[in-house]
Image 1 (cartoon, rainbow, N blue to C red):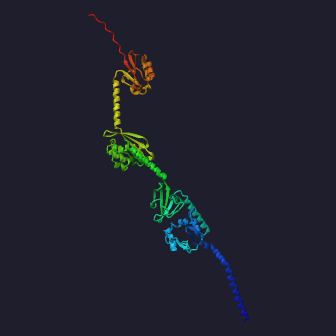
Image 2 (image 1 turned 90 degrees about the vertical axis):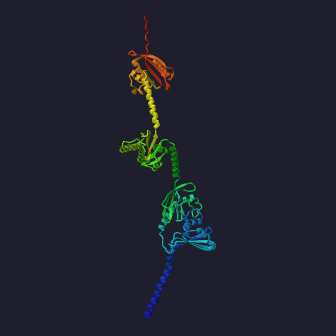
Image 3 (image 1 turned 135 degrees about the horizontal axis):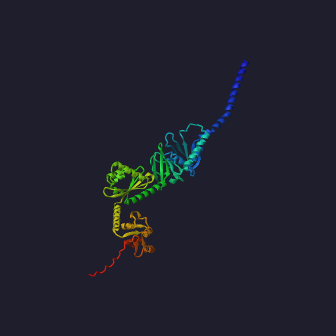
Amino acid sequence: MQFEWMQALVIVATSVGAAFLALLGLSVLAPRRRAGLAPAESYLEPIVFLFDEQRLVDATTPARALLDGTPAGQSEWARLSVFLAPRFDDLAQSLAQLAQRGRIELTGREGADALRLTAEDVNGLARITLADPAAEGVGMMVDGLSLRAQELELDQLRQTLDHAPCPIWREDAGGDVIWANRAYAQQAGVLDALTWPLPRLFEPQGANAARLRSIPEGLWFDCHSHAFGPEVLHFALPADATVRAETSLREFVQTLTKTFADLPIGLAIFDRQRQLQMFNPALLDLTHLTPQFLSARPTLFAFLDRLREARMMPEPRDYASWRQQMSALEQASAAGYHTETWSLPNGQTYRVTGRPHPDGAVAFLFEDITSEIGLTRRFRAELEMGQEALDLMPDALAVFLPSGELVLSNTAYGALWGVEPETTLGILTLQDSLGQWRAQCEIEGLSTALRNRAAQGGRGEAVEGTAQMHGGQSLRWRVAPMSGGATLVSFAPAMVAAAPREATVP
């Protein structure tokens, strides 16, 4: 009995000792566990700001980290506004009523998972709390290395966009600017004092668009837009140089157009696909084609077909040969300078010139040379008539230029000296002719007369003399000046005086 009592006492003492040791262990380990949870509690610390008017009085660690991610160089209130204004509608108007209402709760514009803002008036100070419903109660631990890599990447992206030379901005469904980089803010003139919403520099053009747009300062930008859900991201690339080049090109084309409009020569320019790109009014007058037809940009062969139908080109023997001839005209014009003369059925004559242009284009010039051809024909007829008159004269005539070149002779001259005018004109010189004369006759004073003529510069009086042919015939030569310094040399049979007859006595 006593043994059982002693056994029970030992069991109780052992149980009490074990319980005491367990409580002691828990009291030692509890602070360590709380210390181990400290980082999570610190990480889950709320985002709270305390403002006196627009001066920051105090803020939690996450709140200060949030301010560090906004553009520097401004007050804490302005930097917080940069973050909140794009995410909450009517933020400034709502916070202005905080003193009257005492407490204001706002929900962001993104939807059910949007941020929530609570503003409270605490003894004249504004206490602003931000909460993310999607993160409440999660209590997850964040890997420090992953968070650091994300923050580094975020910082690099911010630096990249801030140093981008072109304006970049984001608009919501209503067209309000909800984000912009430094170049946009600088172009808008609000870099030193950001205000929300940011002023709109460009009129909305819709998503997936590339438009050339200007801002009030006269600067031009090539804008590219891309839709991301209800929002649109815009890029504005400077295009002043492009606009200036296009303006200069347009002015140059206008100048050329005005110049071409005053030309009497018809102009038609075809591109590398041989479609008409440019023509002037003279082409309408020369070809009698309608402006509607030419404005429709016909092909080269359609243009030539219409000319053929209007009888404004030489009448072909058959259509196949005509097509072959026009193909040869197009190929020759594209390869280099090419000219053809068209004698039209109505009696007119056109000169058609084809010239290659850059990038495979070709230009055709149509010139009415009817009067020129007529003048040339009349001039040729007059020359032939004058030559015929010279050939009918019995005296041998030859005209030499001041350079000594033989430019004109008649049939009597060729027969006298044994030369052919068709083969000697422009080839024989005065010295060559003088050698021929000396070889066939004895010339007295002709060489001296010619030298004197050269010394006098083609001026002076006519000089005459006689020459005796080796065959016995006597010639009378004459050297006379002509206009322009030319010299006329003529040869005529010498007249022999008849002997007087004796009177007969019947």
